[in-house]
Image 1 (cartoon, rainbow, N blue to C red):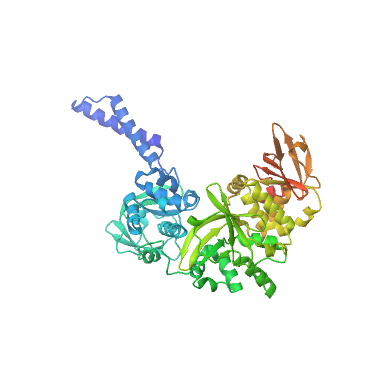
Image 2: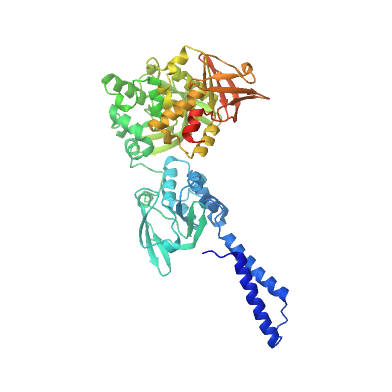
Length: 531
């Protein structure tokens, strides 16, 4: 039971006074006054309180790493691998944190071309870094006093660390021949505990990979093999297998592949219409031929690295269908037959028979444009991409477009308030969700439909100059929105909190898009989420 600080203080003072009286009555060995005793006891109590305060956890694992000078290289690695959000989150982790000297050992392993994490910019290098860092992380909080001999599974799935008890301490074994020793233990964080170690830990597959003097040299693997083993290419792998093209990418080549990420399939399905809900709907010979044509539109019959990018047309393996490579500021983008841009997310993944570049959306060739059924969805995608700051809204729009009867918008006027990316982040934080994928259940998709339907005003196309103070607007969802005009236009939902129009009058079909800085919530959703 925790003792009351006043009781502890009182007992100390009483004992001190008693001792002082005994000494004073026998002989004045020291000239100790009552005030000095009180001062000394108070100082002891204050020192104890400061010690208690210093043991309190005040920051996340990310903050602890950031504030520890000897972990400055680890901080850079975490940022480069995009793990800061994980280490700032609500989970509970044990992090075996290598010192700067230990991290420099990684650079020595990789060779003379690596002096800092600024040199990690290819897919392969970033994948190596991610595997190594997650190999240092364990689910749950494990204090040094609780560490037991045996294997501990890490966040790098399928890979464990070996704990060896050594006297009153422990050492950590990885796939290398050298064990890691703890330098400092039990640095507590709000979301876990940090143990500082003297060596970087390396998993078995990275050890094998580093047996190659040049870690970016993947000459032993074809594009087919890289696609098969890369989780981010699951959709591409399945589509290539279905169309019989995967084996082609295992041949001599050379090839350049613009590889769309997994969720790019949603954009394709949205364009093709309600009949397509997944790859399984590409069942007949006509559908498979269509998919094959789309996939070949992502492949060049040459090896084109980013250092040789140029403004102009690229001849694809999809018949006479060409892509435009366009310079944009300090970067390049691809423009397909729909005149929509695809941005590069990673460039120059090397293979034995060519190069892979990853892109953020699927490319549509001219031969497929005439088959696109969902013209309303296409119009919205174009408008939202051109508007900017609507990436999350577009992702949600893709997921629920078949539930919203979008074709009705081709025949009537409307006003659509789309929340900005930051507006979605704010809502995620409020309801305890942090990924779009968490809405993929039937219940989640229905919730999204209700929310976005509440953002759409039917039967009237309003520009910013048409809004009036106190105006009431009927939405597709069925409830109303209120307009407030006061040095700007604000939209009030059922929470009563204003959402400001930060970008207005984006012309689309028979209506207008306006970007707002807060998600609009109807009464139906407020009750369901208990907000």
